[in-house]
Length: 469
Image (spheres, rainbow, N blue to C red):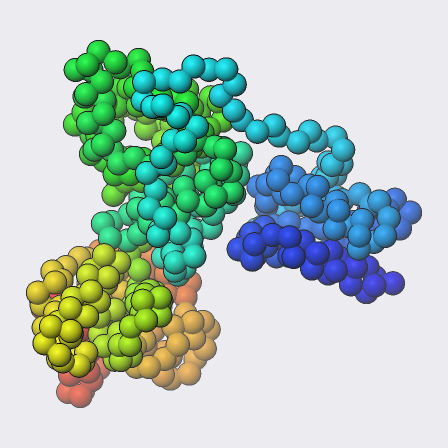
């Protein structure tokens, strides 16, 4: 009988999947595990991996889940969650889900009879959100370096101001896709909730507007305008670090929007803790929601981004050229797009084929080689690429000679080129302990002394790092 109950639950998930996006389904519903069904109590028991997922499901999808359960089990059933509160010690807690009828539908937010401000213009409800319609989630290619920010960003766009991701603070180096992502949040939010007042603004433009408002004695109008927004998206806020008056004004705007449950999305090239010149009262507010790091894309993600752009723009570029650009463009999305545009221009003007020779010429003129410090991911990627092995197999428990050698070489190079202790290196390369790392380094050092071919092989790998020896 238990098997049939599992089938009913699977059908319930199928119904849910038909009514949400694939990303939402995989993030919030796929982790749910069916436990049992109590026929007497008419209660379905499911396990969820964290209290947060339970809270999120109850806040946004309680009606959808109740509808799916009723349609699948053909009767009104209750839902009980088994929350994993301590995974290491296998501690769980059962919590009964809310009934949909007990939860009121949220009313849409409007400005009511509030008078328009000077900055609203003649048609305040027709506010231009200043968003780039080309920067959407559809063309923001997902990879390991951006999976968390992208998933959270989509969740914020689906439910602005309604989750614990408020404010959402996204940081990362230049060219990693921050502006694209926060634009995508705004575009999706505006498409889903046309009535909401959504605005994207750069920190520099905000500062110029504030300066003009002070000069024209319209500071109150400036503040009132920004406090009337439902979703405020600010890019490059690190530029305010030396502008205390701008920061003080933004503090009041932020505090007002936050208390009203309006969504705030911020982007910076550094985390809040590194924003020198910003007062603690604002830093604590930046950090009270979610801080998500957007890393530079690795080689594979760069390849995926280039292929996507080629497909979208109808370009035909050989695979070896795509791979070369991905390996050379310093993990910058802007550099990738710039190189592609330059390749097309050179090809048309000089009537030449797009090949590696042309790509090398363009790269030398368009991309500045960045001697950034190597990371464990950089080293693993290059070593695995050199030996043509799967990184997951190297990170696993396999004792095959080929995988062991790649593992040892990676640990040796990690100790040589990073400042990480052996314990940290071991943890990041398959969860090994520090003694394994020390043994690997000793093994490689001994082999280097007696094996000339191996020395040349290792030198070739090191040269691919583009670092001075």
